[in-house]
Image (tube, rainbow, N blue to C red; front, side, top):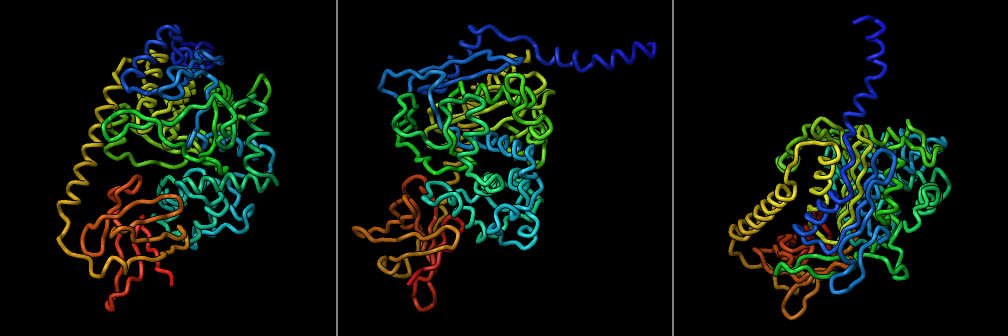
Length: 495
């Protein structure tokens, strides 16, 4: 080949590769069939879907009902909670602040939040905004610090100071929602604003995300989906709404499929919106770049048989998938599931919102749609994910069965009344043990559960979300109850 011909091949290679990666958009009727098959298989009450392809909205539709027993249909404008899918939106907002030079990815967190503190001296001295966004502080998950917590976001972040690190600083990916939320607070402080005002002004308004809200918009909007879950008998029923009324950069955003289509277009168009830059290509791409390597356990690898590398960027998971790089994030809160997927080289983006708890439908449907748009060999992702979900349930049932089979027949060392009192932890706050009709009850914030005796001074929870959790009282040699071990924390008894 001549030097001129070789140079021309190099020049046009990206266009050739892009054309090969993009494939061809399937007809809407085929997408409709795929979606209806998934809904029938997983028995979800409703679903809203947005697909962006090659710079345009290729599909935007609602399916099913907002609430079982009622006729109101899910539409492209029905509002759902995004839960953890809020993280990519917050990361995009922070990229805008980096554009403004209001913030830097590698700013020490205390530059913007002087009161921020971590218990480990090395982490406390060096932690940056980037560390918070890619989950490498060394803190464990500590979901109980945010789940159903009545504490405002700032107070949750302040309590990180009382948690020991689970891993050495910057050595391990450990998903930490409260620390991610702290990055949102740092950006807001740098801009001399609040996160909820910034996300409206810098993202929702310019993108014309008219139904998007930083928190649950309240009972006024009529077009909101209701949460559902399978009960003990397997029937799907409406459940109480999780109260996402505290602004949380890591998980409180609500939006519709139509809103998310605009957000996906922004991501795939390198930060351009209607021909104008809303966020720079470089800083937006920084949120997509791998930052933390995720060690794939047996379940992750079984769920993703075509992937070998798993990473986390700044608000996005990343992995290889059948020779393509895919960015994605899932969201789960009581009664709802959300999924965002990007295949940048194919210029493909998918948003899925449904109102059924504990279902893998969104993940299965996303993979099916990626395969179809990228013209990849078909795989029955519904069956694949369902089989793994059943296996996971069987393993959990076996774990609980073994837990109770191995317990010892040892009576409590003190009368039940001796356990009654208030127990406190500097990070998690106070929990109360009461005695009602000869049975102990545990209460923490707005969570409550009866306790049944397990063995010795250990009791087990009987109500969600602490069913089969163990609560072990600490009793000294004088028979005095001095503490309570629960949720991997030692709560000290208060006088």
